Length: 229
Image (cartoon, rainbow, N blue to C red):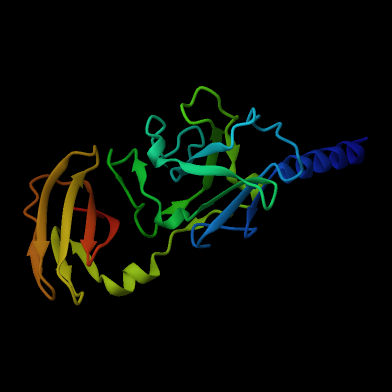
């Protein structure tokens, strides 16, 4: 009886997966460009497009171990932040492409939009299929059901080019270029903006102890770092 039930669950899970496929598979935060294909089997039970050739993916990341909240996510009320999931007649399915590591997500920690901080451990990726105005949507879809593997974001290119550290409130810039930092409190309040010249060290002159976030910009590249003062 238990074996029959297990086989039934596996077959059902495989059936649900076949409706929506993410490639490569498995994939994680450092997999580069992902392709999401929906409906190639003709099954649209996850979300009925009702003939609409333009759908959208609303996506988010969970990083704090609480699966009920998405710590980094698209902005539901701004379709411009969503990922187009459009009909591709050559494959007979809806197709979307995205790169999780380079998306500008809204952060619940800083209440601002940007890249998620390097070295962030991501437990899961979530997404929803919806129409343009958000009047219809699928259930929450869980990334690990479609090949997502938890892991740490590694911004190797940025880390190699922009060598910056914050220790005891002092910023040290060992990069070849000047860097610009926007400093935010844990509540998302912007504290200050500073420019640190190449090879220089600068005291941020922070007055309160605590956790801070810094948006680091250099040579038209951007990333977030987290530090404690």
